[in-house]
Length: 82
Image (cartoon, rainbow, N blue to C red):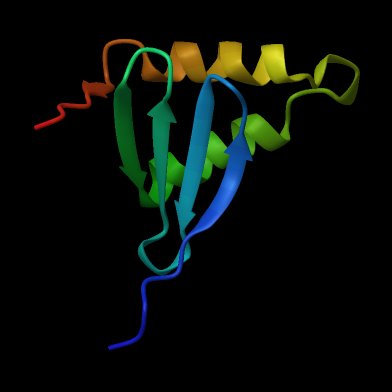
C-alpha cells in the first residue's frame, strides 16, 4: 500500500481544508472552535464548487471563512483531545 495522498485545499487562521483525492473527500477543521467535518463524494464536490464559485470581487479570506461557518453549523463535530 502506498502512502495516503492529501493536499491542503484551503488554509486561513480560522479554517483548514484537507483534500483526500483518493477518497473524493474533504476534511474541514475549524481551528478556533476545535471542530471538524469530513465530507465525501457529492457533498465534497458541492463544497469545493461553492468555494471556487465565490465571486472574484468578493473572494477574500473573510468571505470563504463565512461560507465555511455556514457549512459547518450544526454538522461539525468537536475535536476531542485525550
